[in-house]
Amino acid sequence: MVRDPELLARLQRRDPETLASVVDDHARRLYRAARGMGLEPAEAEDVVQDVFLTFLTSLDRFEGRSDVSTFLFGILHHKVQEWRRDASRPVGSLESTLESHFQEDGRWIRPPVAPDRAAASREAGLAVRQCLDGLPALQREVFHLRQVEQLPASEVGDLVGESGNHVGVLLHRARLRLRDCLDRKGWGPA
Image 1 (spheres, helix red, strand yellow):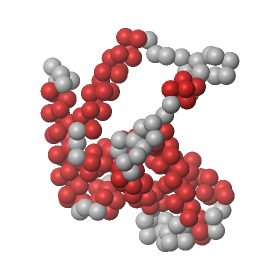
Image 2: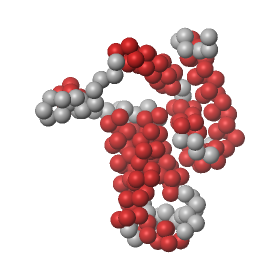
Image 3: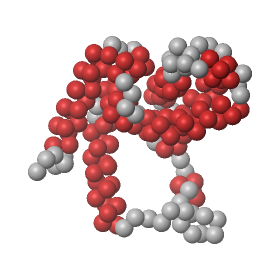
Image 4: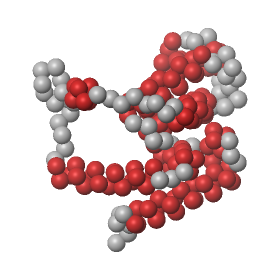
């Protein structure tokens, strides 16, 4: 909860320093959550920008009954659902992909990782991503919000429209499915 009425007042006045602080405090977590919910990096960035734009335009309705992060994650939840409903997602061009890896003078922005290390990491990441993608959307979202973002079950329940107990059931089922999927892919315990 926003226990500081002055903070709520600064938010509703759209105080630039307070708004910048909200963005600084929450942008990374929102981006990670969007990625965890299945969005590609560029899509996740766009959705997070939409979250902050919606937050800014809906501050008059924010009464401080929930924490700012809960309010932002609620907006994120709705934005990701909108994205999922949008069947026509643009695909990036090869040229823009290449440009994102090199500086103007042709040097790497971030040098590539050693091939053997990259291959092992890619294989493990692919296995996890495939298993996560195989989860029903609600289970995947609950898994990410609980495990990665470490939000309390009650907040996750509010965000996804389920009871806290049902969030626990969804998380348990997601874990079982992930474990089974990773076992079938050869990534289970030895």
